[in-house]
Image 1 (cartoon, helix red, strand yellow):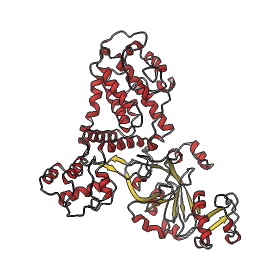
Image 2 (image 1 turned 135 degrees about the vertical axis):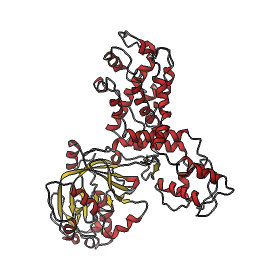
Image 3 (image 1 turned 60 degrees about the horizontal axis):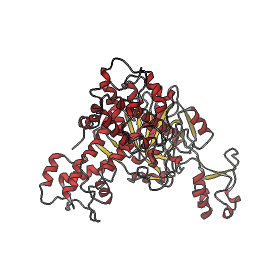
Image 4 (image 1 turned 60 degrees about the vertical axis):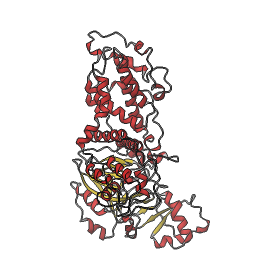
Length: 570
């Protein structure tokens, strides 16, 4: 069963059921004369369980008591949510936050709203929904300032909005509410529909079973075959017709439609597609649906940091997917390439930037971490290491005076205090390969080619091998694509420039935006759930996550560019 967008739109109706219930039949609509004050008495005797979770420091039953009076005064103390379209626009967004488990109290707040809706007069409901809307705006503001909670499982901490911040959203319109969506309307609808589908299912029938250790090869009987088939049906990898046929069989084997469904499941989960039910496949088969739903909803909020800007070419690098995609000015994907990204102990930083320079036959200026942890220890083990790898020693980055390697007593060198710098000359074995794409950032992270001898690494299924940079499998094709967008510029053919072995930097007249993101779950264009390995543990952290890797600075702003040029860490 495939979940196409039409079916997903139907599934999302569950999220709008609450919206319709809360919006219908407003008693406020019949009022002709507004009160001359907000009337806080409407909350007297009303139980609101959510506020102490959402805003623990509040002495009121709401989180934004300091500004609600002024907000309602601007509307002549009339209700703000009489228009059902407004409620239908905001409620699914609130539900998406609750499902992501990133804001404690949001699920309880939705329950409070549902309870208050049935109270005659509905003043309390309208007041609490306005407060919830302001909480949601605050939530988004806090994430924009500090996105780390989406990657370290720490809850988002709210800070009450100022009146000026809140007033910009009033009077309420559907357009203003939709502008708060974490993704496009269509993608949001599809994703939340899948979340609702997952949460509507009975418990994963495999979640409590223990699979045999040995893999299930092609043609072999499948342990708990009917339960495996049900999971494949639930997740859209097996059609209803095939499921009905399969469970009628006395013995379910890893053949035919069942094997095809296993391969589909593996492909949609970023696994090796071999049709063998091994440990990695089993690990995903037994995963509770509620956890899949949480991670999908969490990644929906992460999409806030993957902005797609039409009218400009753009690169998106998704670290867990080991893939780079290039989008044209119309926002359509036109190119993709495998990538190698940072290993878990040296993860690739998440950030927003742009390619402003293409370098042909680059020098590699060795970053501090690699200098300390790799280059110096390698030279201490092998006195010919620097020479064999064409690595030169500079006095400093500001003083490019060369220092002979044999003039240094390497046995006495402390890597952490070594004052000089290393640079590798251009060539096929340069660590950056033949082409590098420079971007403003303060992490010394690039997109680049690979040393010729390292090309076989791209054949690996999981490719987290680098020290943080993103190595591109098709660097020449990417360079030609980027250079093709440049206007009023002429240069020789790319291959001729590379084959000259001469170093050349090409500053771009038209920059190409780059989003480096971490998305482990989404719904694809066919309505199918996609899952990728959580290679850095950001979905379920088991150890502290360093903020520098998940701060997501935006180097497309002047302040961040200035910091990058000064090499100030973010």
